[in-house]
Image (tube, rainbow, N blue to C red; front, side, top):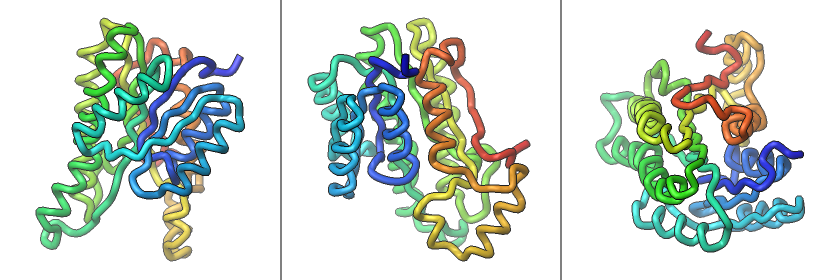
Length: 248
């Protein structure tokens, strides 16, 4: 028996990086996958094909989670296309880093909108379905930066810290209906984006991590499987740092 057999998950921002890894790992564990992309259409359609080949039902949707109505429309469509919505993973996110003295109001607002408001939009959109089912697992992607802060990332840190407070409140509100809400706070995860960075700097970061390596997208995806599965049936309102001991 696969851990997520028969469950349907919505994953936002899954056309690359961590989101793509979560989608693949979920399909390998038997989950049906509805996932969104914003602009990367060809990777999204390639992923859809790859997931379907694993014997599960998978579908890509072009949708902007930061838009309230688009989130509502997406969930309405997924409800028609799939039998249930058992898991929501709010993964979509952006950075627009700068020191506070240089950051523009526009860059602050945009990061809050994409990273934090999208979590509100999508959670509100799936709430009715999960309440009817009397079950569900909501997994929100924060960051170690949301837990400890980081110079040059006031907007990103604020958005990711906001996700933690939001999630703990949702856990308290919906727990009586068997709907769980947990947070994953990834540390330094090596993706195609980090390959473009100066490798000496990257090695220094690795050396500062107790486990002496950067994380892989699969490291995050595996924790998502735990939170999505019945193995974590008595876990809600928690923040799990996936950072190789960065915050120990």
